[in-house]
Image: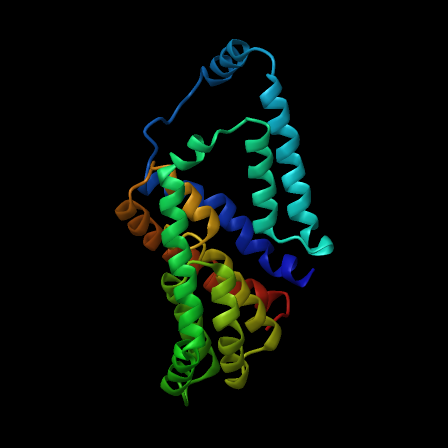
Length: 256
């Protein structure tokens, strides 16, 4: 409940304001679709009843979701679940092998995403992340805890440009940054929650910042330059909402 209560106001503010801001700085090509419901119903009628393959696709999809959610209890990794689903699709002839090999965008994403994930792991193993954390701690030595914590939050947010996984980012840097924050005198609950919230708003910084980002970018609707430019601008709004407004809210409810 601490997590929920602390995120309540900045979360609702983000939910309301971020779409409006995006609508202004990156307006959609189509702004009104008054005939969309009728058009969708017509297309649905044209499709006709579900085919045998579509029915099989439905239960395979449900199975994959169930196995993915319960995987931690039955010792089944997400990779294994994905392989099971793809294998069933191939065995039931819903997909052909050529369908998979021709998905050039998916293979392209897989390769460079894997490289970036491994690079983040190597940065940690080779000592870069601990060195970077120590460097920041040394640079802000002697400052007040507020200035130190703001610096840590900004560094934590923008260092995600070096990571292709939120999990890798948290594993590598969250404990070190939280330790520096607590040593500076920052309120423990406030520091722990705020760094965690910032982890969540890092997910769109780049087209490889998270799993969903890579999938969305792979659809090809947004160029890399547009993605980076808009995400940098939106990052400033995210930081203002969560770091400024969020800090005020956490102070109001007694978390700092």
